[in-house]
Image (cartoon, rainbow, N blue to C red; front, side, top):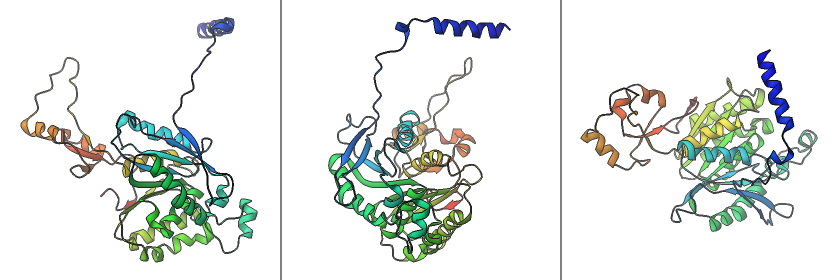
Amino acid sequence: MRLLSIFGAATALAFALPASAQLTGGEPLAVATTYTVETGVLDGEGRKITVRLPTGYEKEPERRYPVVYLLDGGPDQDFEHIAGIAQSRDMNWSFAPFILIGIESVNRRKELSPPVADPKPYEEFLRATPGGSPSYRRFLREELKPLVEASFRTNGRDAIIGESLAALFVVETLLEEPTLFDDYIAISPSMWWEQMKYGKQAAAYFARHPEGDRRLYLTTANEGDWHREGTERLVDALRASAPDGLAWTFVDAGESETHGTLYHPMALDAFRLLFAAPQREYKSYPLIGGPEVGERTPEEQARVDTECTLENSRWTTPGAASRGRARLYYECLLYDLGPRPREGTLGQ
C-alpha cells in the first residue's frame, strides 16, 4: 500500500505541474545529410542519398575513408539503425570508421530484383515487375559512385550491404559484376529467387571471375525451404570453387535469429570483421586496496612504442585473450568479436 501511495502522489504531482514546466525549445539532433541525386538511368526525378561522415571527418582533412553503400538506405528505411551501428565505434573502437551512404529505394521489388524467365508469378506475388538490378548497378557504377568519390575523401575501398531482397542484389552483383565493390555484405539473401538460380550457378560464375581481392560476409537466420537451401548451395560453391582472391565467411544464425531480427546484430558483426581495428590488452587498474600496477618491462614498453597496424596485429578472440592475459599485454591484436562463423576463409 505504501508503494501505491507513493506512486499516486508522484502521478498527481506530475499532472499538477504548470504548462510552463514542460519541455520546450528543443534542438534537433542531426546525424547525417540527405541529398537528391539526379539520374538518367533509373525511372523518376532522382534518388535520395543520406550521408553519414565519420566523427572527426572535418578535423582530419588528410584522412581518407572506405565507403559503405547501404541499400534500402532511405531516412525512413534502414539508414538510422545502421548509422547507429556506425556511431557505436566512437564508444568501443571495435572497427575502423567509414563513410556511410544510404540509398533510398523507390520500388525495391523492381529496382533490386534480378531478371526472371517468367515475370507473371512474380508480378502476382510482389505486385511489381522484377528485373531492375542491371539498371540499378549501372546507376551505382556510372552515376552514384563517381559522385560520392568526387564529393568526399574516399580511399578507394567500397562495400555494399543489404538485407533480404537487397542482399540478393548483393549476391547477384558479386556474381555478375564482382569488380563493382571490394566487400559484399549479404544479410539473409533471398536465395529462393528463380528456383535457387544463384546458388545453383555460383560455381560457374566463380570460374569466370577476374583476378582481384574481394570479401564476402554471408549470413542467414532460421528461414527454411529454398531460402535456406539456396544459401547452402552458395556456401557449397564457395567451399569448393571460390576464386583465389575471394575471402568469405558464412555465419549461421539459424538457432538464434529470425528473418526479422537478423539485420542489426549481423551488420555489426560484419563491420567488426571487414573493418577490423587493431587493439591492445592493457594491464588492469589496481583494485581498491590492492597492489599497484607494476612498471612495464622493457619488452612491454617496446610493444607500446610500436604502432599497431593490420599487418603487425594478430587475430584472437576475447575468450582466448582472457586465458593468460598477461602474455598479451600491449600486443597488437585483432579481436574476432560476435558470433562464430560456421565456415569460411575470412579473418584467418
